[in-house]
Image (cartoon, rainbow, N blue to C red; front, side, top):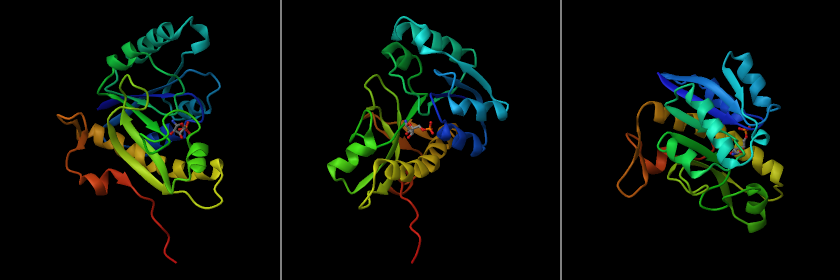
Length: 215
Ligand code: GRF
């Protein structure tokens, strides 16, 4: 069994998608939030998943928070730590502790639009495609090796909320797929630092393009 700990800060819809995917060989053993009011905690509790709150406001600095967070995570002995809308910048020691088993989803086609407010910035830039990226986490923010991306069109008249909703639908396909690959032991970092998914054609399978309705 691959033991998975998911970190959230809010809604937790990606965490729900991963839980609901019922990935064979995977066990979501805990959901940890830095906010006690994160809606995703309710879902996790209803599913009988252990939850913990590590409130960043209780700590003097990032280092102290990350130390406490890691201590809480480690009580669950995870094989994989999944950041799913976890809105804290993590310190290098934290990232290095979980390197190779720490995934994040970012709502843009990285390296474009790292950071916050990605959907508004994509619309303002006039890009025709946008999407989401699942990557391994390294100390440089939003810059770790890309595992897979999901692409959506930016349509005339889109506002950030409409675009965010289109991207989120694809996130819910993409993230469980990547977690499944990880659980199957198929995610490998090659000699150039890029990710290879063993047994998947690179362009067809590590890029999700939304199904377009005919007619
Ligand atoms: C998602 O758009 C994710 O890409 C970003 O934060 C959002 C979290 O949504 N990192 P949810 O909490 O998973 O619903």
